[in-house]
Length: 43
Image 1: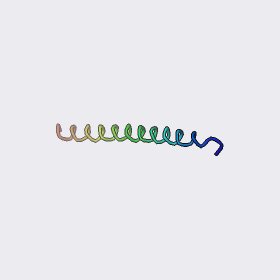
Image 2: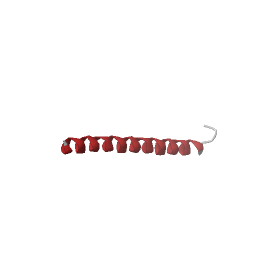
Image 3: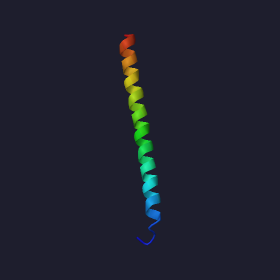
Image 4: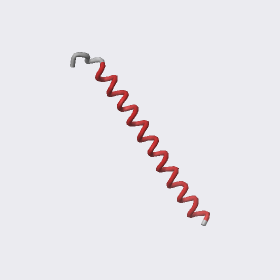
């Protein structure tokens, strides 16, 4: 609580990292599902 301006910065970095991680996982999941669907269609 001695440095109130530091808390928002850390929170912002945490949120950006969280959003980046979630977005990365979402892309991997979508890519995996797309691959499975394409392979099923090809078969």
